[in-house]
Amino acid sequence: MAYHLKCDEVPAAGLRRMAREQLQSALHEIAGANRAEIPAAVHATRKHIKKARALLRLVRDELGKEVFKEENRRLRDVARSFSSSRDACVRLQVLERLRDPIGNEGADFSQTRSILEKQLEAHGGGLSSERREAEAILLGMCDRIEGWPLDELKMEDLCCALRKTYQRGRKCFGYALSDPKPEDFHSLRKRVKELWYQVRILQQLNRLVLCELLNGARTLAQHLGDLHDMTSFHEWLERTHDLPEEEGVILGGLICTRERELEKIVLDLGARFFAEKPGVFERRLLRYGRQWPARQPASP
Image (cartoon, rainbow, N blue to C red):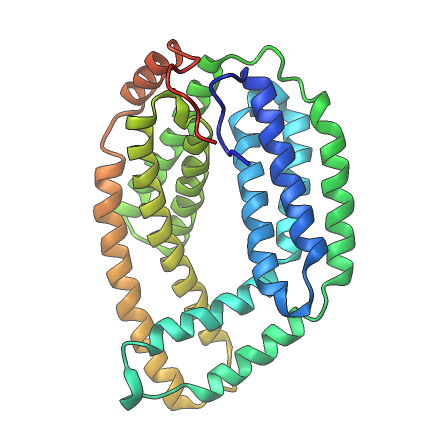
């Protein structure tokens, strides 16, 4: 399953193929998971949906406002239906990352862990209704893919759309740089992850150059994801009143320290990643687009 245009594909056919593959993979994950596999299945399902949504945004002008809005809303609703299970799992992972540097001499946060494990058990208890609703939505979307109005789509259109994503990401980075707030880093994370997936779709335009861009987006997205998880855990900690005071104080201090570290890393990486102006970025992409189909063989 290749999440990129192949060298022998016209854009419309390749994008329909990728959309179908992501939806079918999401269906496979949620249908085949037993109780013990639910956290991993939820994570994988949400990842496939994010890829499908990034693809949708790449062709939103061709789809038209109403089609894009409805299909994007359906995918968003499916992802949100599994968010409670995903959040409970991530909090446990964050707790482990916070505990590791302390080692055996520090607190083990046993009561915090116990609360999180109970929440994960409650949210992951089958998800039968969420599964049924998600399957119906994704199957219906698979049936509509062939009707998407993409036949006139050109590579230049995709290059222009990618420039818009880059421009939105660069704007979000400017907000985070001038006055760093959690909501600004959250918006930046969404835009960078979207850009990462869209660059993957077009990477065969120039594998040498775009794979370098892809690696930069991946690294930045991973650090932004870590920061998002840390901030979400911090917010949960402030809302939870049945934790022992000592555990809460220690965890709060560790989280604040790690958040500041991650913010600095993100701002340093982002300054390099978004250094190019959007117009220059687009002209470079269009130059690669005029050479499509690529000369080099596509990856399997």
